[in-house]
Length: 316
Image (tube, rainbow, N blue to C red; front, side):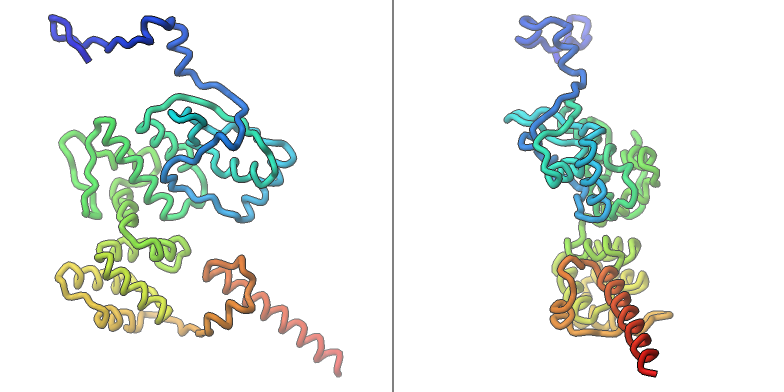
């Protein structure tokens, strides 16, 4: 940006300003609706929102097969050709599975930071977002706001600290219906090992204990993960706080983690343990989470009991 003799900022003049009209320059930034080949649509880099093959996806596939894409996906042009998706990743997947070759899109020009903020805001309205999705989405948005010139503070503190010129956590929180402290806690989850974060998404580890665990060093988290899997337990909040304090004092090791996880929790319900390999040999391959496996086993037992009851009645 140049300055005149009075010190006022002057806009930078480029070659395009000489060879394009003002109308052409204005129209460049206006959104355009286009039908784009799906092969030319690229996912947003490090997109934090997962595209899951669940019942909702099956319903979307059926809808797309019958009516096509009604709501356009939001995309921006790529420097190397094609388009980068800001919203509509699930619609793209559904279109591919429905056998479609093209997709209706709204094309608009955004710089990298604008694109990140729009991508997060366009997807954050979805119901039932996973903790991992919120965690990485909030972190990406705060970094984008920082690059735009607003101050931010991604400290290790769970509770946000005040800054002289405001706090980007306030901005993200107000725009997404969370407090600034909640924003910081979600961002802490990005420090978890992926396997532990998956356990948070599957609701095997509660949100608050997970935040405490995020303060453990990566090698400590690795040991904790091994212990959780071997013992088939997860830390309570009190145990997670104890793990964090011992880690910060340099006194956390495998034996200590084992001792803490072995402590009996209040109202702890005894779990039935089944050999994992035997269980996997008879379960459908599409069952991923602990909850899905439990539901399947219960339904099978209900069906078995019903059949046994019917046989007993017929034998009388």
